[in-house]
Figure 1: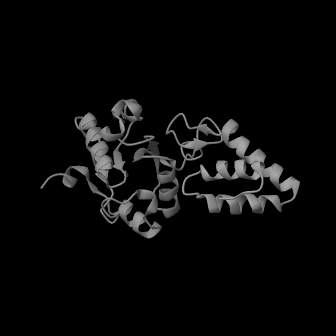
Figure 2: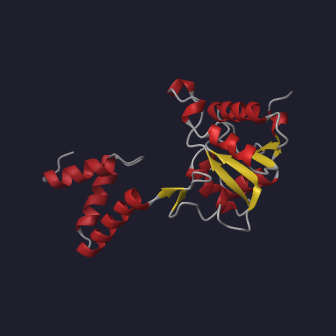
Figure 3: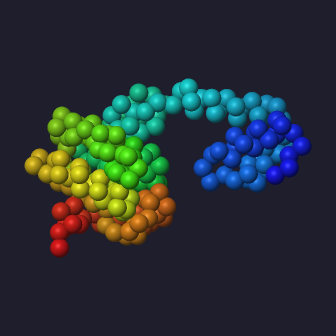
Length: 205
């Protein structure tokens, strides 16, 4: 790509480092920004810096938050005895958009994936077990993507807590096997939450 400015070229390189952004899309963004008022550019810069400096992770569920405890965990109307286990914050957003879940979350921050060098100690599994042991939890919903990594993580957590007096359930397979949760439409995902099934039935013949 022939760009007649080193400054523009550097900006394109930075934008194209973002997920799913190619060089052509990055160039469109940069050229668009060149046409904006300096105040608009400054606002964008400040917003990006605030992402780095001010965003926190909820000390209860690991969701992104503007404060130490996120708005979901601090909401007295949420059912604290019902925990939905998800891979990352995008899944929290996807489930919240369905308006079908009234409990709280636990964000693992990844999935067990030996091929990628990610083991149980690399994600927030022990924190989840501690939370269950320290609080009155009635049900744990496994809402991980129906992939090999998601199923492996579900089973590992299940074995860690199977002797505890807690109901474990899993989203109904309205979400296609192999798909990531964040790409499910809201209706399908909402129905999967409502029609969740006991976890034991998901691996027993």
